[in-house]
Image (cartoon, rainbow, N blue to C red):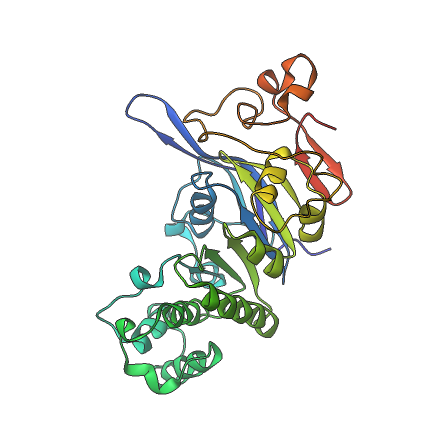
Length: 317
């Protein structure tokens, strides 16, 4: 049996604070992405999603843990081979700030090929023109600058650049948040089409649960640097097990008010704490923590449980 395309084993990214404390931005995260699979990573702002994505591409150093690409451990960014660098691509959140305003879109898309010595100059230009067409842009706009495009068109340019080196995994860090709703739908369909056309895998970070449900076959839910639930998209949205996942779904119009798991209106109040509490990280805000006997939520770190293909970390059965 072949290994997954990407595997994270106990990945941690911690930062030393001037006060002497430690900020645990990512703390013991493990999951896998199979070939051709799209994994959606969801959670509140500040929970560590983007930091985790940056760690995968090598922009953040691991404090602990391992990143495996096809079963082979990925070293630090400066030690990665060109082949490793080519296999993982990145689409940033805001296309206006991620594209150099002084360069034409042709130069922007072909830059990765030039840096990696991928193809000859004439072949790079032909590939760039083909990529513009693939993402739905007129190749004749090769010499235009980013400011001459709309937000959705700029994001298409960013996607074309991500495809330049024929990657196997594309990390999308909230690629729709800077776009209008109507444009978001077009970009989502483009990402779906590209996944089928080029056999791409995605790590898709988003606050928009409707998009995650539409695009991703699996979902991972993150809170304060930790995963709290992982499973198939249909199972997560149809029968979430962790109270935090249930709260997220209750905050959107997606959830069915008659669903069996939604036995009462779930709400949380306040912001996530600055310091990760003992026991379950979610217990200070959890609307169901009082259902666990003897205050175990505040004292004991929950173990992972399985329910079919779902896995969740909670003391509740």
